[in-house]
Length: 62
Figure: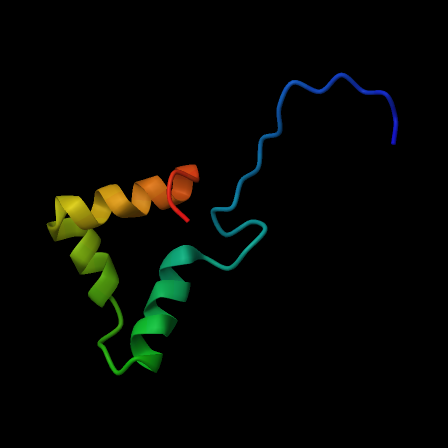
C-alpha cells in the first residue's frame, strides 16, 4: 500500500453503500410478522430504543 498519511475515513452508509436502513428495518418487520414501520415507530416513541440505535450507528454497540 502507498505511504499515505491518512487522518481518517469518512463513510456514508445512508443508503449509498448499503440498502436504506428504514427499508431494511421494514423488511425485517415483515419477515418477523410485524407491520412495516413498527421499528420506525419504536425509535420515534421510545427514547431508550433510539439511544441504542444511535449507539449502534456510532460503533459504541456491537
